[in-house]
Amino acid sequence: MYDLTLLGTSDLHGNVYNWDYYKDAEYDDSEHNDVGVAKLATLVNQIRAERRGKATIVLDAGDTIQGTPLATYYAKQEPITSTGEKHPMARAMNVIEYDAVTLGNHEFNYGLPLLARWIRQLGFPALAANAVNAKDGKPAFLPYIIKKVELGEDAPTLRVGILGLTNPGVAIWDRGNVEGKLRLEDMVATAAKWVPIMRERGADIVLVSAHGGDSGTSSYGPELPNENPCTMIAEQVPGIDAILFGHAHNEVVEKFVTNAKTGEQVLMSEPSKWGQRLTRMDFTLNRERGRWKITSKRATMLNTNTVVEDPEVLAAVRAQHAKTVAYVNNIVAKSSVELSVAESRYRDTPILDFISTVQTEIVGAAMAGTQYASLPVLSIAAPFSRSAVFPAGDVRIRDVAGLYVFDNTLEAVVLSGAEVKTYLEYSAKYFRTHAPGAPVDPATISDPSVPDYNYDVLSGVEYDIDISKPVGSRIVRLERAGAPVEDTDQFVVAVNNYRRSGGGNFPGIVKTQVYNKQQEIRQLLIDWAQAKGVINPADFYVPNWKLVREGTPVF
Image 1 (cartoon, rainbow, N blue to C red):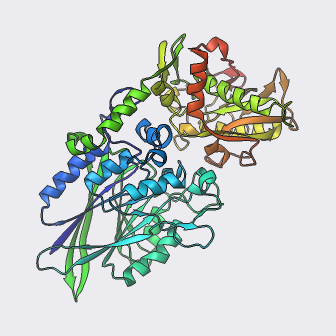
Image 2: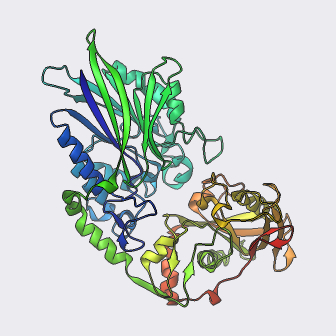
Image 3: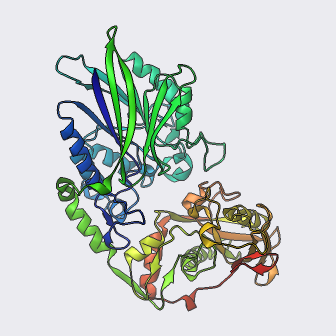
């Protein structure tokens, strides 16, 4: 009887230290989770020590180099492509000595040159079997590895096949970076192609590290392969022993899925996000008729809040962490009052108008002298955070970054009045239906299947959302300057690249841009605030939408 342990992480999103750069304090949440590779390293080291002389494999399922100001700093402020410096996530993960990482969709956010540089800095392979070159269909990255593992002094070598699958949504979410260069193929079909090849080439067992959720649904339409197909992979592709998966940021300790063709049980696990959890899969193996056979398998989950940070990881990234902390604490402006995003999901708030004001001014100025100069400019913003605040007084880069947590760029398209109304109807599905007179609790006002970042607020028109009406017929008033918006009216609409390229599957927005200078919205907000010196809602706040029921405001 022999055994093998797989340790799995996913969705690290640029977290090394247990640090909240937006609050300039140690990370903490309502459940007292901790974050970061430094915490994970302590758990990994403990398990390796406990299993000294036994086989332990460490994998990551992707979304690694985006998500914190630390990651943004070394992609945007001092990009590793310009400086040649080693990326903090390469430094941290190299200390752990991973066996492989899968590319997540966010690996593509900063373009293929930066991704290639990061991959070269890793001391282990980066996998993505379903990302192929657009021209010839050949793998653009390493599809899989077969790792030779020693289980014991007297045991034959175990050959462990590890297949990496990235998310097809990259084709939408980072269209600007991959279009014409990469094709993102179906994860299920790709697994079905490669698993038999891996078995033929000597893999005794096959592990899949997949950047996709398990639900079988997608946040986009049917034009792309499934975003969250991991249960389908387990059911449909024979020859897989276990799947480490990520992308959805869920904690799935242990899930068994029966393969429809073989009847074998496939073990699945998802270790939450940001380094809060570590998946542990334990396999026992026997030799039967000259072949390895897994006789039992199970998964458990470890919480990183039970350990201290690993000093070697902290040391490897200390200078970069300190530089990031200093950067995000730079003061950009003063706010005349405190501005909070806490109620922005269900009330018109000044802080979202701050975003839209900046977007509207920049796009409006760019339209001058073009054929669109006479069109009104509208702007789309979403409540990305529920905790972001501009304090009264000094506003720092970290405050702006906490409001605009994504590395989106600014674009603009032309929409008709009819398209604007359809867009707002789609956005309004965010709210649960509340009959007139029924109590409304802000904590439960929204449909939990729709994330906050997929609720868009529009500035430049006035509208009411009737949450007592069914989805699709909730926009009961849509006006501009007191006159009804006609179906044939034309507008220039400022929007982020994620939404414009199809993220969230909003209708009508995927079309040719009339503005696209590849400028990051977060930096535009910082630049605007620095130029003004003062953030005063009196300069930009225009209440233009509200929730109603049968004409009566909800709040």
